[in-house]
Length: 129
Ligand SMILES: [Zn+2]
Image (cartoon, rainbow, N blue to C red; front, top):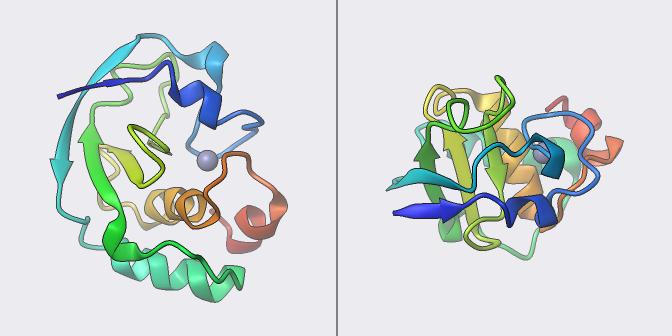
């Protein structure tokens, strides 16, 4: 399956840090992705986010669609580790090198919980992801 990365930019405006990106950093228009089971540490990352953020998400962990891709090879940024929002708001894509990185998982899960791009200090800085 191929995923349009161009659309991602529309969902991630206002990015200043973390593992997401903005339009100017997109390099290609498509990335091959693999639909996968939740990463081993994803449920722990979800619990961590709930505890540190105080959020009460209306979305459920079980409804996340997990994808893995070689994001680093397919973007201008050498450190793109993940993003949320494509192909839909239930999807999280993780770079294949970061599948076991709890910070990356927690960061993208926060986007999913909030259903928003951008990185306000609360909850991102508050949670340290
Ligand atoms: Zn982000």
